[in-house]
Length: 454
Image (cartoon, rainbow, N blue to C red; front, side, top):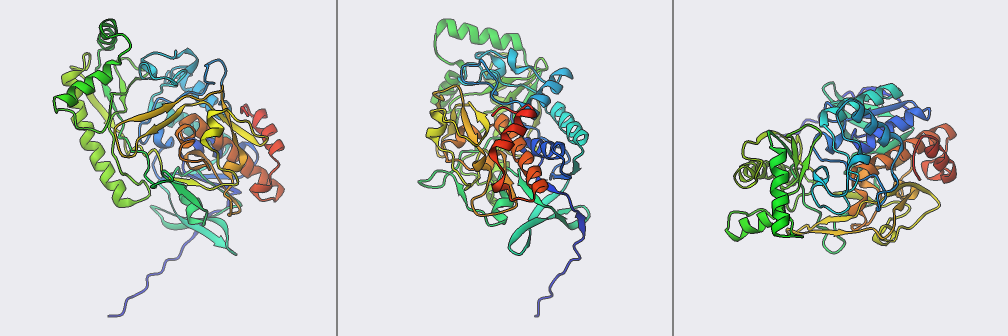
């Protein structure tokens, strides 16, 4: 039987100067920055809202945007604009008011000073309004399919949505897909997981609960600290349940975060090992296992955690929270030593300060290592794929090693690298140069003029 070849008439959707693929933290910042820098900009996003893991996966709070000693901000610009807007509308808590030890930061979690608790709906609205105000053309419910190539060079993207397949031609692509989908499709080299075996950090299904008695929770912890000074209550709860055989999850403690609304908490406890977020079968298993764990944990907390006796499930993430997939190999690979020693770079376009936070790919523990300096620099070269032109990356998939990734992967740094990539993309379109040829000094000046810190 002869196979019939299927053909499509693929229409041209748009021809922006800059196409940003992925409407998460980095994509929001990249598209706003590119448009504000004068480029005709388009942003595509597979969901019907922006925010990425912050909204679709309910990942929160936003981790620290301040130096390790908590005295100075290390991320500014578009990130700070979004935070200020959410605070003004009652949808977030000002990170400057968040102490190092407290419930908003996941009680007694080192390195969680000045986090930003927020409501996911506040972020969805704030992001879309800022994108529209900047003059970006957003296209939601639109998924990246492949890179459009001409003469072996990226010239845009093939996408799919309710209208079918379409083509978007662009001068520069910015990959803010988190997984490096665009860069990988364009032929860029990339890394995945630990160098010794390629295993990646486990995934988490976040969920939000309501009707929590906040005062009862805090009183319980205070009582525990008086009886067991220095011991973390929610670690003791897990150890006790594991000893009795009730606790079977590969996680060593409960990680709970208060939200701006009284009685509402965000729970980061599920742990799904062995998930590859670039593999559909693996991701499907992870999503299903994550939801099983969420429901079990809800019942466990009602039974074992004071203040949660009458708690009710509000929602689980639309998607699994995937910590780690591809990291694009760029002109420079940021190392663990660079982060830990607070190294500075002449082409720095962002700063980071969050501790090295690596969830064991094969077990229960989480490795936390403090940065030995107020902050470290992220070079522009980490945003430039080593062997592909007309393309920049930003967010989770920038060029770093597995250990450095434990710090750079958090939300504030995704906004910072996104703003840098969007600004550089617009500058490249204006000058006619390749993104790798952009003068880092001019880029740094532009970022600082826009409120960025570098």
